[in-house]
Length: 132
Image (cartoon, rainbow, N blue to C red):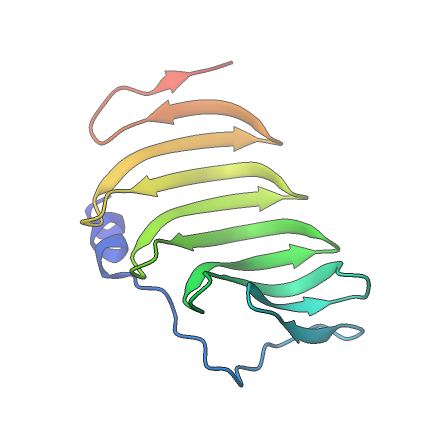
């Protein structure tokens, strides 16, 4: 657990250059707007790496999309570039761990989900509540 907290404290948002190239899956093409850099299957259905941007171009979130749905682990950053949370998704629903960090990188709270349904909630050193 201590390693996780130290890693969170050191985590900073990646810097995305204007000419940043994603590894887009076959059949998709990279698109960039003022609010995102992602791989588009067509019709704004995203598949592959996805980077959400603040209005000033700094990274807000980094993750993967599968045919228009968030999938896998996403990392979320505040406007200063500090990691504020990590969430696991499956077909657009929370699925797995959802972790929130304080500005100093310490654990604020952690939730566990199964297909969009909250299962447990815990805080640093505090008891775990089961919601099912």
